[in-house]
Image (tube, rainbow, N blue to C red):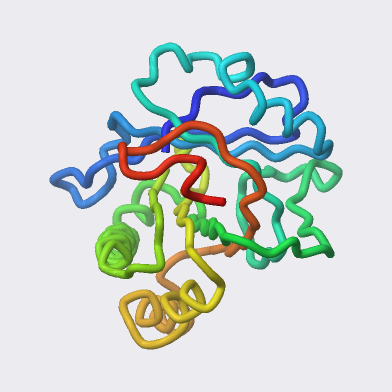
Amino acid sequence: MAWGRTDSAGAALWRFGPDSALGSNGLRTRVGDVWGGVALFTDRAEAQAVIDAPAAHLGFMADALQSWHALLQPIAHRGEVNWFGQDEDGPRLAPSADDPGGLIVVLTTAGYDALPPEQLQADMPRRIDFVANVERVRSWYTTLPGTLARGVFNFAPLGTDGMTFSVWKDDVTMMDAAYRSGTHRTQIDRYKTEKTADRTSFTRARLLQTAGAWQGNWNSADLR
């Protein structure tokens, strides 16, 4: 998905970065033509304003060839993500007690602790393995009729947990893909037994409203 930078006024948290290919070292190059961002708002009206007029809030929308924007309502969140830093009084992702139903969006994150150079070198095979399997899951998801869109984004600065993003037609399809037999379930089991990442998080959200179009094959009208 291609989003521009949000207006800093209003957003409690903003993360933004590219969806990039793997380099010869097995890690992401962090260079790509497709970028994605996520902004957290404590005020619904401020989030709504961005969806109603994206170009007024996204600084380099004029440079994007195509863009798609979604207003999401989190309904479930678990795990750990380092987006919020160490400030215990800072923003947190708080799921809504109300579930409006409809299309479901899944955001997952994964991250690693900072290590001194010699320990980092020894830990690189684990990290490269995780990245490779994220790509395997993404490729597998493209074969499933229930997924409408997907992306993998690395945020700045370096060390910020990356995010996967996917849109699903319904809860049952998403749950089957995530937890029943298949590529993703295999990696969940590996994470539990092998600790393939230092931390992960999983967030489900309802898609309330969209603006724009993506890849010429679906747009906001298709997601009603």
